[in-house]
Length: 62
Image (cartoon, rainbow, N blue to C red; front, side, top):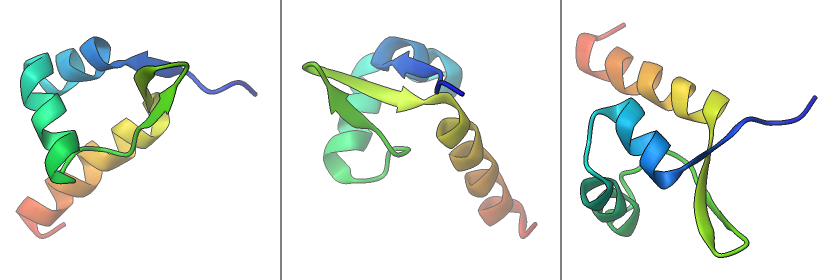
């Protein structure tokens, strides 16, 4: 099964952040897992969703 990869803009939209905010998070090591593929920062959709859930659980004690 192929992974669904999101470009930085798509991931930023999903997180409701600007592209520059997400780039800053990547720089600081606080962003969801990503990889540079063919010169573009890409985010795995499943890993992004899991990261969002983990952030929510950490904040709510869940």
